[in-house]
Length: 285
Image 1: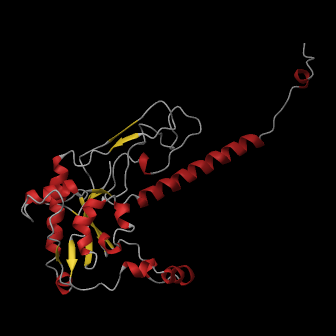
Image 2: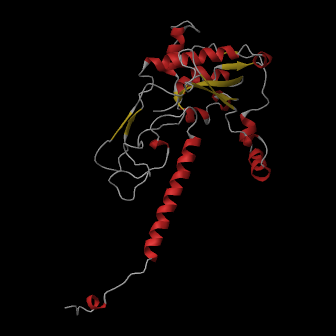
Image 3: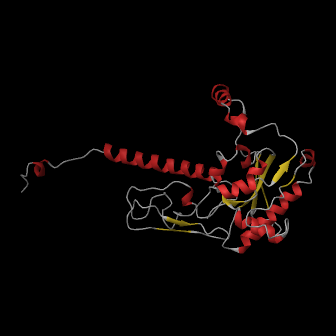
């Protein structure tokens, strides 16, 4: 399972936010950060995170099903130098959809699917432990996930009517996404096509070594003496937000477990050992 997102460079502004990639890649920005802890390098890259319930999520007392991830810069701003590769965007798609906005101010307010119904699989490629496993995330294999992301895009559209968005002249990027040219822009069919062509990982995969199936409560792999797994793969399901905090909590718990085990081993070694002198010299009768 994984959190997936859509909506890259979906919003175009006619006003500058006062930040561009040339500021970030400027060597002086790096020096300013390392020596003084100031400047654009202090930014996380994701300015705001917020969760909410889609209209498809009837029970509002349960966990939210969508998150909004706000990025102040579009991937078109670096002319395909870094962000295109990071996001896995092909040259063809970048040149058709993103490149025309390289000299405009674009931002991303990405709907993130928090609890997808689609579930992938991981299989061994061979009996050779050095061969990479075969991973099929099966994104959007359940149609409900597409419908939920469409609701997320509708929510982003509503944000364009807020005062701050109007001040910056925010509007939707109305350029048809490659592969969706035959659909009328801003219709449900268009957004469904758009999501199928532009849905990306949030790099939050979980569940491939889940607790109870692969590892025990102490993170030890079953039937293995000294093999432990302590990362997001042991989570049995996705959290309603980024995986960073849960993984830190897991690591803290694992550290306590390992320290306790190490202390127990030391105590065993310190115990006095009594020997029967007759057995040592083989003179027992």
